[in-house]
Image 1: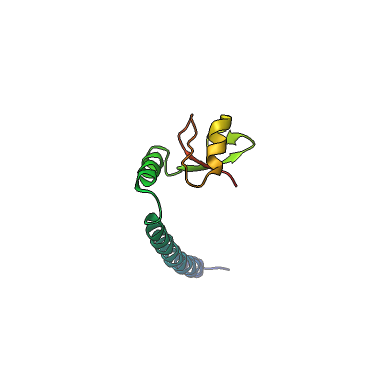
Image 2 (image 1 turned 135 degrees about the horizontal axis):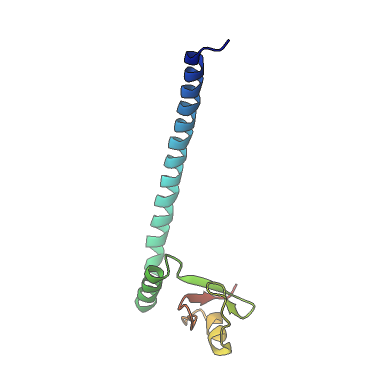
Length: 109
């Protein structure tokens, strides 16, 4: 017959193992976030300041997602059809093409 104390000991051991695994995962994710943030900061210097301001504004207004891929003539963010002139601008790396509906920055790839 199992005693309640043995069950408690097993439950506590499982909890401690899970807590340790979650703590390790938290450290791993914190490192990945720090690395991504550092990479993002280093890339900022390579972007035209006006384009960066547009990106930050769209990112703030669209819940953190400021860029969308053009897929089949549609914006990958809102799925609305993109006019041909905007789609062609998305092919030019020196220009900023934005979806006329959701204003996300478009790329082709």
